Image (cartoon, rainbow, N blue to C red):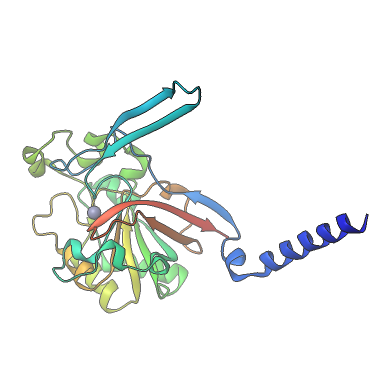
Length: 265
Ligand SMILES: [Zn+2]
């Protein structure tokens, strides 16, 4: 059956071509989903609008076919989400102005879980970054530098344990308590290293007690990206993985829900 053989040969050729393409090579490895689902328990800033899903038309239609569709609404900054530079920099880029390729880069995981266990208001130091470099070499160009606090990874979506309070509204703000980057570590990363952005497993790259959000201002002011509430950091290696951040493409978005995953070689 020559026709069949030629189709099979073509298919085999196609597989060979795809396997040899740079895209297939980049995606080789184990995929780790680092995203929390969106539902009523999704963690938002205490004074932000929570995720709300309502059922739209849902059921068998009178024509006999099934149809299901929901509505949802939410603040931009909640759950596993990305921050665009405009979030804390007046003339910064919006989510839709950051090209897709810019969201993808090598993952550097700095494990400070023990320190955060002792002190839930812990601030990542320049020394913590240098310790990582002692072990793994210089932070690679274009890296996502991830602070692994353990607080979000272990307790998300328990608001009291992650945010330090389960109160809602403005009254909750003075009670926020969770670790974050120190302004000095953010300065170091944007000035002394060539990073893509910073990420954390808590709701903010600034620690909970921050009043002036200096880390956000440094990162956004340097046109870098932010990533908050990322999941599964306990399963990410300290070095070697590639982080893929796929933000929802919101026109003029200051941030947006993102599907975040790593490919681990
Ligand atoms: Zn945000």
